[in-house]
Length: 315
Image (tube, rainbow, N blue to C red):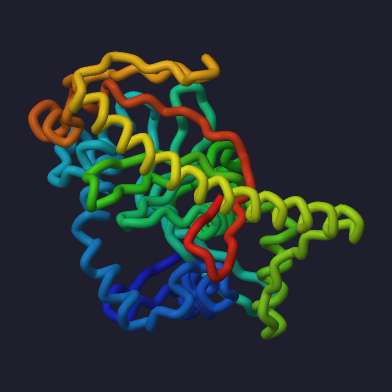
């Protein structure tokens, strides 16, 4: 298979045939991208801005003894040194089926030091969009597996399927790169998406099936919690105001403790103190190597987020 990419028009071709759609365009068209409402010209402009950064990240994997030029590249290079055995950057992949031709580029395809296969994408955005990137790398992994031992642009890929899916998210506001482990989108869903594209239909996400009794109990519990939470916030406001007044009296009168008449409450005055904290921004700027070495990756348990529409608060 021969996969080409023409930067000027942002067009892929597979074996000389112009691709029907790119992976990015596919996800945007079917509402799986956070950029679905963004015009194509704006997307291309953003891609052009990030071209130099992507070249820096690509060369870390593709050029021997390469010294990265960007802060994002330096942090990625450290991660590569610590975690990878070998890898390739900017691997173009194509897919052909029943006249449907799709192509895309995997930012990272690599073998970890423990021999685990990794496929990953770089993102340089203020927000991290987990679902979108999960779809992106899962589709590219699917394409690579379908190619089997077929050569791509003269090189044998022989991809047996990634075990780890990662997004290297660099936040330009904080100057920090975070490797996010992603969940793989099931092959069945990828095939359903491709089938929708083939038949000119819009993909619909699987709907959550909830037993009516459970649904009613859950909704009632959420409503009860919201009502109680509002009461708690109102009481907290009153308490905080009264605590501020008590603190003023403690300081004015030089009292160290006070006990309520019934003995149930003991209030103790704690004077102002100083705390020593590490300025992470300054540490990262002056000692980037130490900052990187001291970073700790921890897993966050899965959860659901409930948004109360029309309210400012989220749980």
